[in-house]
Length: 87
Image (spheres, rainbow, N blue to C red):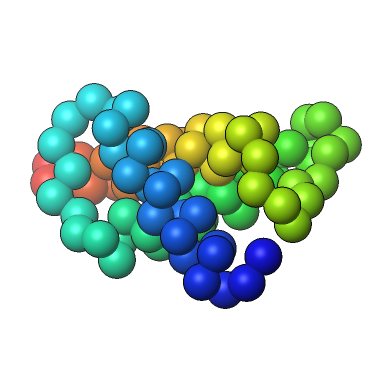
């Protein structure tokens, strides 16, 4: 995939993760994209470790779902860190 494709993939994964997690998310488009890309990295690493499967260069549903799950984990971690900072 090209760099633009990865950014769009990250934006979509981050947006779906924001919709899937509870609470308010004041982050903008750039942070959503960064969370999605980080989620894709986290999810891709977990996929390799847990299932021994690498994400390919073509778009399919499985890598997208793994990226969304990874982005959800990243969002939840960010929420936990943000909540900790407030106290």
